[in-house]
Length: 594
Image (cartoon, rainbow, N blue to C red; front, top):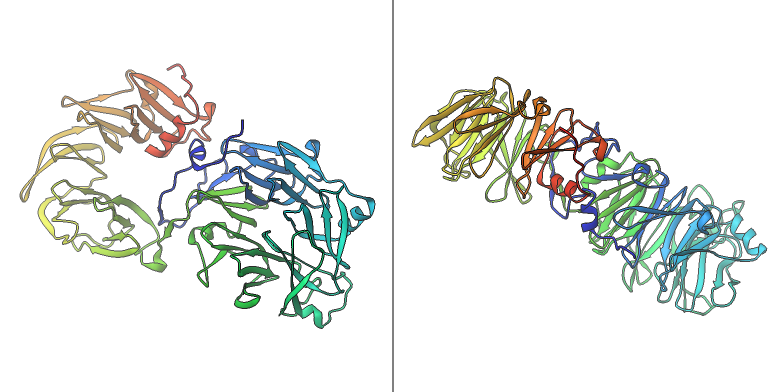
């Protein structure tokens, strides 16, 4: 049974759903991840089932599957796993540069050797042709191919003589649509997208005036007569053939985007209406359902054309040195980027905003992010006494004169009484409301790390090795309870029943009934360094440890998620509801003896 690709399938592998993510760091690299994933991308490599990390092309077919062309065959991804097809399955060549789908649902594969094959009804078919055609295909560079509704295959190439066609309904009979020598052409086949491009040059041709022209032809389905629509001037390049990096695609009935070498052109009714020169060769073009034309540039950052402008998606800057080969956007809006050395990068949404010093942040070093009740994002950069507020795409600032500009804000708490509590390593300050942000007299002059609010409005404060419960009454801030762990505290977590869980460098504690209880007397493994704590929706406590992976406390039993059952490392730094959801979706977590 076929499983169609969709984003919900990817959630089972831990890919976040369609959410807007704000990138505020220097778009860092996770150094301890086995796949060396560049955040916020998921990186698919051979360890995930790819036959090779050298990937040339990506495509989503009409059934929803993703197809990837590699130097070790072509593979199909269903959202769960990759299935690879090679010459052993009927593929004409194991090095596949591109795949495309025709009107019947056949997936065509363009290979390194020039030989053609296609996938149809769960089988791969090697296209048969005579010795003469085989020789032609082996000595020419195939640039593109399309199939019209009459089952005529049109092959664009760099070949002296003309354009090859093959009648798939009549024993693959081959014909040549003649062209004069030295012609650079674009051929629009009626009812078919995209146009094919090529030239009738030979590698030893001498440049002529015709080398400076692109001839645009059209042809009706099933017809063999070309109609010349226009001749467009192109720049004289230093190498032959002139159109080595060429491709085209339909935008709508009247507009076509195409590229040659480092030029990107928009045609409207066969007239050039937009032109853009890149710093290097344009290697690939692709189009998404939103109408963006993605432009992949050799050894450069990808850009896209939209609304008569060349634009950038800042999050792609992290991939500019990854030797990218293609960009595809699936129907759900996910971005798939292929590369020559690092497999495939997947981004679940294009709705990313990047904020750095260059566009408003006081510093690129982010110490804290907190979401306010009005959904704005409060950002603490380090060091500094400025809190930056990101509301939609605009920035505003709260300058806290009470703190020096060498301070570091460790926590921000939005209290239910509309005050804002700000804690640093030196003191705790309370401000009247998120807008006015005027400091109140209620102050605790001691260092603190993080805070958590209880149901009655009192606030537990992590004061490094101690925890204190504060209650504000007007201008006074009273300490209601005080307890000590004897060890630096990494995380506080409050359960709805007001049970407080405390993660420290020396293990896990529980504060209940005015007593601090260590959990390692019962579970010795919980005497390790605790990095993070989180509750799942069903009440399980998820514990991220320094060297034991993730530990789940469920109904007074412990379950491990570590290298032995799928975690890439036993060094867990954090957990979150999305991580918990992803891991729950994989398979039942294996129980290990305590």
